[in-house]
Length: 579
Image (cartoon, rainbow, N blue to C red):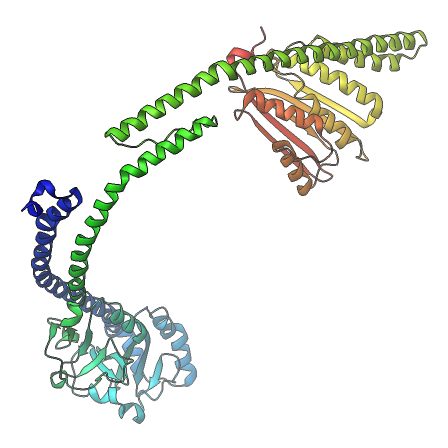
């Protein structure tokens, strides 16, 4: 009896027994009942879907045929067209004039997607066979399609099937033709009809049956077994078939025609048949899967404990990696949470005490190195400035005023570099430095270099990063103007547009090719090295550090046509105004 006592059963066996009695058996019974009900529902649904598909095909076929009907009615109802065809012409030239002046226009533009071709037949001997008009010869009169319409004297077109072709034939006798017989034969696009039948969505065979009960078209027209021309009622179909009948009624030119659909019941229930094996497999899964789950649950405790031990060993090597968090509230989950909290605490203490002390000492060392570098950097310009002043005074004493003027501008530039102890300067100060540089360049180039600087007075007080315009001016004079054979012109415009400071620099120098321009832009954006334009790279990098993505920079250049540089800087209220 202890064997059947639940208190003596293992937890895994209890879970398995509970699952078999409470879940597995009820699911199997439910699936069997569900299969029977689903079979009936799917059969009904498939039948409805097939009926809808056949109705859609019926409507599409009528739309295609209506294209031909519209064409036949338009020609039948045109008295001038009918009279022209039946009129006796005095000569061929007389007919050709009538054809070119009237008939050609009547035939043009009448074809549509559903119509392959149309032809007018007449026994008027004065008409020439050409284009859409043919003589009603004896060969035509003995054709199969002509014989089918001999008994039809109705004023509307007649749908006939002949030579694997569906056609509409309309007698053009709306006016008195004087005994001339005139017919319009419209051949439908059979490729379009085949496509409509093939894409109908009907899971079975579809037959187009004429009023006499003969099959005239089918969706398996390429099959050798297609009974085209046979009587539909004499065809034998399997016992388990579902038949559909869609008859055209109330339409004079389609009266008696019908679409007959035949669908194998096994095809309808094919998907349902597959579900029988699905029920069996589902029962197996319902039995095997819980067994695997119960086994997995019993070993989950071991896996989670081993994971905690592995992370504890990592702590010994100062790898304070936390255990990925999990949504668990049992004892092992609580142990994992506490371990992560302890690891984070140890790591924070090390970062706050040990790493912070190292960073502090490293910062102090860098500050000392920066101060020393600044002192060295300041000594050299002072010596150079004093030396240039000595050269300038000596030049004045010797009467070399032009040389003294150039040396004065050089000294002025060095003085600016010494006095600028901030990262930003006003636009006015930057333009003064540029003017000094250009005066030196004019001493070098003479009358070859022409300069035009124009600045909005309201823009002169705004502050910008120092020496961000000068490198581009230097590049324009040295690389752009120096190699040009004619007179060089450098234009600099500084304006205010809304909340932006706009800087535009133009020159008529040698410019750059598209490949060279692409290399320059890549050099400015990345860490590429192409051997020159260091000043431009430095200025562009400082603009990015100062403004981030809030400034715009563009270069346009063509070989032997010059270069155009545009810079737009945002006007930040807290740093831009120098008042």
